[in-house]
Length: 346
Ligand SMILES: Cc1cc2nc3c(=O)[nH]c(=O)nc-3n(C[C@H](O)[C@H](O)[C@H](O)COP(=O)(O)OP(=O)(O)OC[C@H]3O[C@@H](n4cnc5c(N)ncnc54)[C@H](O)[C@@H]3O)c2cc1C
Image (cartoon, rainbow, N blue to C red; front, side):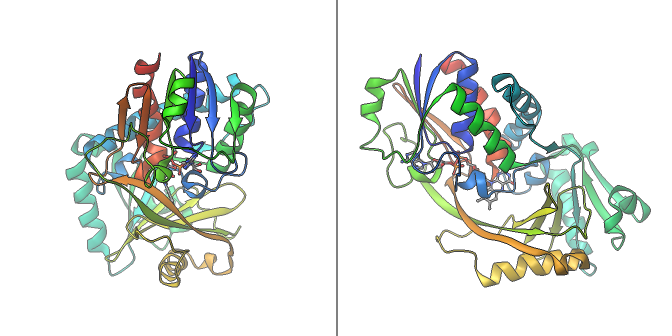
């Protein structure tokens, strides 16, 4: 079976890896650099946090997230089956810590109640911690008297995954990067048994004829700041619940931390603004004064494709399949979406 995948972002790569396992002859067509991507997958924090996200999204997306959470370890193991020289990809599942600053404790309690309402069947995975329990879990958070611990949520190193998947796919797929798409993909559909459109925001202006959803696809900007310090040995992603917005900080390898906000989304295509930099950096400095001397490594904005109903869609039109609308939850939904694809393509 000959399959063309348009777009080598997160979804395109995961679909390619799965289809290679199923015996497809895969060609990946990428508009930009394949080995040095500058897409949402590269910019993102790569947190796999379905329960944390349950207050921002619908139950279907949470369900996809829980399924993906269980699929990620096998995906990472399968990379070493495909590529014997594979270097491991860091994937921690120590869960998420959620807290609020002094004076905003009502925000934390309201957030806990919202989580209990959103995912009542997972109440046991959401634990309120008091005083020493907070310090036992994360010694660097000794100034906080209360926090929530959401168990098992994942924190993946996206840079390592993109590098490892590049190596594996270069061995087992045909890669054409800096590729210019002509028309609506119908030419490709004559040449290949299947065409899978994984262009993310690239499909907003120029849809294939599989993009026939009655939902409008649009782009939403998200921002991430990467800082580096060895002065704050946090081991888990932290969500800071504030009245104005929720900010997360995720520890990565080599003393890097990724900082972003779950609700500072905007539809323009500007670079990172002064206002959001101040929001993000002030919050992490208030979390731990050790962040004061951290180096700012990168401040970057990226586009995420979103349908109006805020759920991903798999749309099939003859032999063209479009998967899009992963919004800001791609790392927590893409593996489950690819699994939904396999019965169609097996
Ligand atoms: C700041 C930020 C933080 C995020 N944090 C998280 C997080 O913590 N957890 C989480 O689950 N998700 C997170 N996300 C969201 C996640 O990164 C996206 O949902 C995911 O990357 C979407 O995957 P995709 O493959 O659909 O799109 P992308 O990863 O954007 O890939 C699309 C690819 O298609 C290519 N393309 C576009 N047009 C064409 C064309 N015409 N021809 C060929 N190729 C084309 C692009 O160059 C790109 O490589 C975050 C995103 C951002 C921006």
